[in-house]
Structure formats: C-alpha cells, structure tokens
Amino acid sequence: TAPLRDLAAARGIRIGTALAADHLTGTPAAVAAREFDAVTPENEMKWERVEPERGHYDWAAADAVVAFAQAHGMQVRGHNLVWHSQLPQWLTTGDFTAGELRALMLRHVTDEVTHFRGRVAAWDVVNEPFADDGTHRAGLWYRQLGVSYIADAFTAAHAADPAAKLWLNDYTIEGPGPKSEAMYALAKALKQQGVPIDGVGFQAHFALGRVPAGFRATMQRFADLGLDVAVTELDVRMPTPPDGDSLRQQAADYDAVLRACLGVTRCRGLTVWGFSDATSWVPGAFPGQGAATPYDAHYRPKPAYRAMAAALATR
Ligand code: G3I
Image 1 (cartoon, protein in one colour):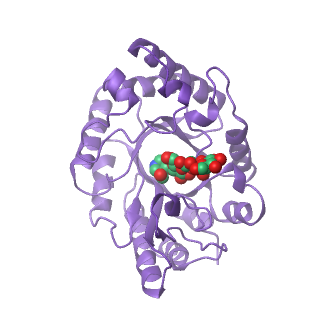
Image 2 (cartoon, helix red, strand yellow):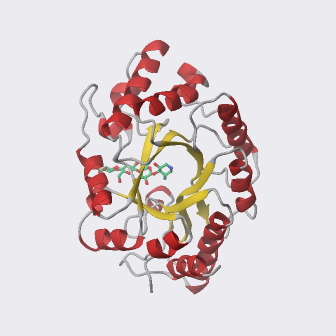
Image 3 (cartoon, protein in one colour):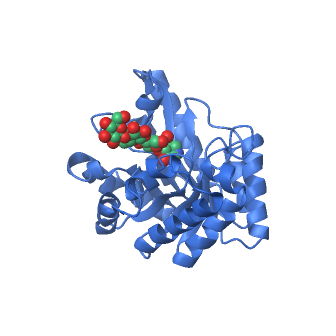
C-alpha cells in the first residue's frame, strides 16, 4: 500500500514523526523517510542540548536531523524554544536577575531561530505554558518574568525568521477543561495584541481509549480564532504487553485523532511522537506502559498504522 506521506499529501496535510539523531541510519531511517513528510527533532533542539555550556553552542545533532529531513523532502518542526524543562544546568542554577534572564531568553530564541533560518518551517516557540488547573505553569520563565515572556518569545522568533510559522504547544488541551480554556484565552489575547502567532499545537499524549470526544470541535474553536492547528506529539499508551483487544482499541484511537484533524480545514498535519515502540519515550516515563506508537519494536506496522492509512484513504 501507499506510504502514509503520499496518502496524507492527497488530503492536504502533513504526516510527521519525532525523530532522534541516533535513529538516522538503518531500518528506523528507512521507515521514517518512506512514511513521513515532516520531522520534529525529539530532543536535539532543546536548550540543554544546543547550549550545554553558557555561550558554547552545539548544533551538530540538530543539524544532522535537519539534514536528514532535507535529504528526504521532510518539513522540519523546531522543538522547542522556550520551555520549563530540559534547560541547561548553568541556566537553572545560575544566580540571574529577571532582567538577565529575559536577555538570555531573547538571545537564545534569536540565535536558535537564526541558526535554522530557512530550514525550519515551524517552531514550537512556547511549549507547555500551563499547569493542569489552567494556571500558568510555575516554571523558571513565568516565575521570573511573568506572562510577558510569552509574547516576547514570539516577537523575537518572528524578527529572527519572518517566514517561520510560530506556534504554542501543549498537552491536555484536546478536550474541554481548565487547561484548554486557558490556552484558548492566551491564544485569543496574543492574536488580539498583534503578537506574531500562527498556530496552536495539540500534543495528544493519550491513554488507551481516552481520546476526548470533543477533540475535533476543540481544534475548530482554536482555528476560528484565525490560527492553524495541528496534532504535534500523538501517542496512545497502554499496559504492556498489548493484546488483540488493546491493539484494536489503539487503532480506533489513532483513527479518531486523524479524523479529527481531517475534519478541520486549518489542521495542517499530524505528528506521532516516535513511530516505533522500540524507541518511544513512554515506557521510561510510565512504568508498565508502552506500545504507544504505530509500529512495534521490530518496526512492523501495527493495527494503528493500518487505521491511519485507511483514514487517509477514505473520504
Ligand atoms: O541521553 C541521556 C543518556 O545519556 C542517559 O544515560 C540517560 C539516563 O537517563 O538519559 C538520556 O537522556 C534522556 C533523553 O530523553 C534521551 O533519551 C533523558 O533522561 C530523558 O529525560 C529524555 O526524555 C525526553 C523528554 O521529552 C524530556 O522531558 C524524551 O526523550 C522526549 O520524548 C520527551 O518529549 C516531550 C516533548 O519534548 C514535549 N512534550 C512531551 C514529550 C514527552 O515527554
């Protein structure tokens, strides 16, 4: 059957995967290049990776993922610029004033976007700004700079690459609830203030059978603000080992997410957070769970893969 990327192109969306720099050869690379037309570097663009020592950039791993994507006609989603996690130790343990932190953040955004200018189509500019109750996450940036860090990051990114699309990105915003409301209010306010924001990414890290029924409607509501939307980090975890029933339910979940995106004109694509159970982050973060991706640990397509192909092929 046709690769997912060909089926997706015929529907006007991109189908992407997270990809790590140590999976650019052999079977993982072959499957990634054949099936997907978008790539999100899984960790390689995060601040702790690109500036492990203050003032010393190391772009090698991120450049390798970008070069792989370019060689295979895959669009790159930059992940990410401003986040509370995976920050370099010199930054989190340094004794900086608010003014110094703001300058460091702006310089980081400017330098990273400039480095990849013309090679990264879209950036997750601010990642995971909210806590589950819908309050601003009390990470380094919000605690030290207040809410202004968000607009400032977008403005700096836009100045560094006016052609790049700039996104907010978060999880547990896919259905109704306080976190989704908070994201909606933020996106609306940024648009009203003329901040250069292009889209909102829905990470979609789901547990088996827990795709919110209102996912399509939620994405449509954000799109109605004049923003693009996308599914940016889809996976569906389950207790391991999987069995026939759980794999069938997972296929139904992947189908539901893909159809939600296909049902929203401004949904630009769907990215899975790793395509093989061999490399997924899930077992490391949720002991006893895994099997969250569309390929098993031997790179054989699972029912979830066939569900995506079928959803793309049927109108
Ligand atoms: O590379 C080191 C290795 O040298 C070391 O021996 C090992 C020991 O723990 O750690 C390795 O680094 C790990 C890294 O993944 C690479 O595998 C880190 O500990 C681990 O924390 C890191 O996890 C990443 C996680 O973000 C960090 O928050 C996952 O790979 C990555 O998939 C995950 O991705 C996030 C998105 O960026 C944002 N949304 C949620 C998503 C899932 O958590």
